[in-house]
Amino acid sequence: MIAVSILTAVAGVWLVGFTVLSAIRTVVLPRAVSTVITRTVFLTVRRLFGLLTFAVRTYETRDRVLALYAPVSLVLLPLVWLALIMIGFTFLFWATSFGSPLESLAASGSSVTTLGSTPIDGFVHRLLSFSEAGIGLLVIALLITYLPTLYSDFSRRETQVILLEVRAGSPPAAVELLQRAQRIRGLSQLGDVFGEWETWFAELEQSHTAFPALTFFRSTQPERSWITAAGTVLDAAALHASTLDVPREARADLCIRAGYIALRRIASFYGAEFDWNPQANDPIALSRTEFDQAYEALAAGAVPVKPDRDTAWNDFSGWRVNYDTPLLYLSELVTAPYAPWTADRSPVTHKPIRVSKWGWRRQPSVRR
Image (cartoon, rainbow, N blue to C red; front, top):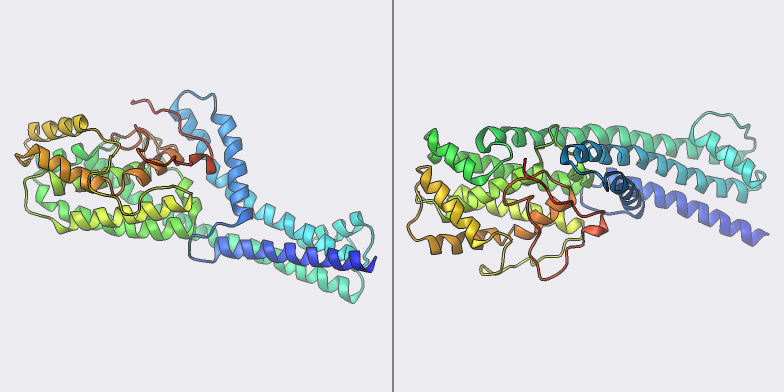
């Protein structure tokens, strides 16, 4: 009997410690760390939402349902933490001869909720009760401090996404961004835009690896998405660097590098498999025909383009290969709205994309 009590007490201490560590690593630790509890909660909720959207045919309806996925998961997460802490202390109450398992559960529940509905006497049991109440309050306090930071990062992310609609239309398109810049004689000012987005990508990497739940927070409008905005800007920068017959703009190159580093780090957290050092001639999901159509559209819009189309294509492909797979992987992962060259195709890789690790594959988008 003594051996059973000792093993039960050890199990209780381990469960409580494991849960508190999960909360700290999820909320406090400023880096991408996947814990078993957090991952299980998000995966379980995602599969439930997958069932809800399985038969949905319109993107707008699917978007309204999926908009609740991340908030619901975040609300459930502290409840799961508190439930595991309550179970762990139930083991400790029972191991210290508080009473039957049900009585120990009642004492633990009374302590973690700070209701005091169950009388607790004795130094050891009161110490356990106070400890559990303190840990429970700590978990709630962590969540309270976590949410404002989360929504502050979300707000900063979405500001640039909203502003992009002015420059690139809705859905956003790289060709449209360059054409509009030419129409307002702002082509020479795009360096400032790429500089702003370089900073945006740096902040994106920091926030979406420190707080991975942000990846699944959807924009306020169904046609907007952080990942399609990222793809549009990267493609525009790649076209600017490879195809436009304008002076070299270093900020476009730096924007691409900041972008593919950020997308790779975020995608790798979710298990994406891709080449970290791709070759310039590796295949991309964009065809030469699509590039030619974009080239002709730019020329028709009076955007200066380089006369050697073959070289332009090779240069563009050499830029795009750096972010092609992680961009399309994340687009499928978050069920992004339609956007040309981003959410209208699947990745081209030599290895399978394991979207199923975090949920379902995106249903084919329909252009609206």
